[in-house]
Length: 166
Image (cartoon, rainbow, N blue to C red; front, side, top):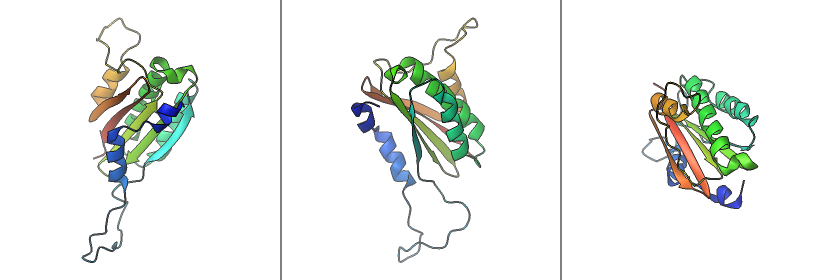
């Protein structure tokens, strides 16, 4: 990963990391109380992968392992595969760079972010065509996710999606 991409962290990632921080237990003295059930939110799980096509399967496996008990895991694996494939085909990452997959899971939802080495063009869904053999990935992301977006430029980009888990 280039130096610029390593240091690139979109503002929404900072907000995500803040959401993942431990919260006080709600006692009047501010000390944590006993925990019942799963934690309200998890710490972000992250992994860096080389920018090669064989790493799409590795990224899918990573998300599958992180979200083992999440009802939205299958959709998260599919959408991660789409975004990683786009990263490798349309950014500098596919020419020898690296990409990072970041996942954060709570009882209510999951957010997966893919960061890459950037490109001059922002990711946009392709116009629909019944004869097209490619170009449907972002339309799929838009259809299955609760929200998705991107931020960045030619120095580094983050594309993310959120899924509801309820």
